[in-house]
Length: 374
Image (cartoon, rainbow, N blue to C red):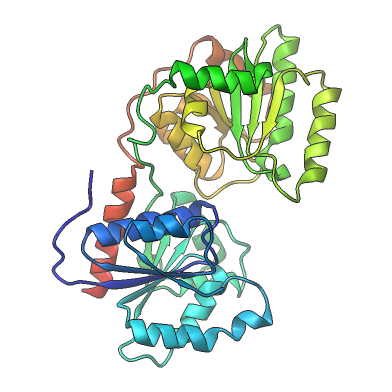
């Protein structure tokens, strides 16, 4: 599927983001850059750069290196440079996805003539207050889920709800094809690298190395299933990160204390998540705080793999719509074990994904750009 079309008017859209190293907001910047180029518009991204910059440029967007995300007085000193860049670019739209770049962009366009349209996207459940309130100053305030919309309305009573647009993040079904199974060569290499993961149903928790992501509950789940005579394996995918060594040691101690050291493997982030999900009996989403969306839920279900998660925030929203059998009350570890046992025994069928596709997100955002600039 493609968003390519002949535009009635060529737009210049500048997206501001702290950096292009990794993350959901950063991935959305690339996806919208690609959509803009395919639709015949000009896409420019201003950030500190990072490993995703090469892909951004290869897909036709321009990149200008300027660090707008570091919380330092030096960042304020870059306001003049940003204002100069925007005056040279003469954008129709400035689209911001993070708070400090939003403040910088807001100040930079003041006094410009013509003044660019200012759009914000709220990707997370930021702490309410004056600093976060900059994200509500957009002519349109894009949110990635109903959860985020409700959160903003509950904390900012003066927010004009008519300016809010729900545009969920999307995944490319071609990248996560329905019913995909990795080939024998990949499976052999994977289980050679991680022999402890072989021989039993695989549970995968894809999450960075932070206590908020529910690694303790996942380890407890495997231990409780073992006590019930149900053997499983657990992959904590992406938990190994620089600077998280103390947390990793804490998890290693927990795994040993629960008697499941031979059943749990921890890894750094990997690029082959599609194949790992496809090999998993269950993909877990156990964050102990509500999240704005839940991309891994959509990725796994797109592959036709069951998801088990706590039913709050964006994850609960997605499971309620796409896979109700995978919902568990937040923090209810007993119900978590029971539901895991049920899904491992017989998992309800999963239909092909009809929503939350990348093309849906791109088309909705392009329509929003044209609406504002029109």
